[in-house]
Length: 120
Image (cartoon, rainbow, N blue to C red):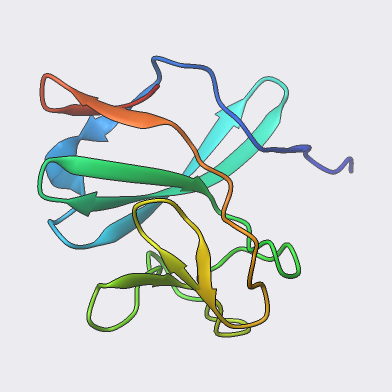
């Protein structure tokens, strides 16, 4: 059995679902099956604003969440890597605490168009 390639970008214009799929102040993970492989990303919603990132911690390369959609600190103020306690700003993905200071999450461009969350 061959291993599926892990992708780190997606084409623009892929509809992910209605914005209401993600409650305000929460995050949701997405896995997209594409011809070239599989993409893992997540989106954080803050009101009508959305911030998308590749689901890969810059510290070791693991996905950030150990539990489904568990990407944020309990107060919802930061993105957290549950493996090694790295903390990232939601707005720009910059590491603000933990073992990856000076690094950032890889952005995944997403947008809201007509109430639908899409890749940008």
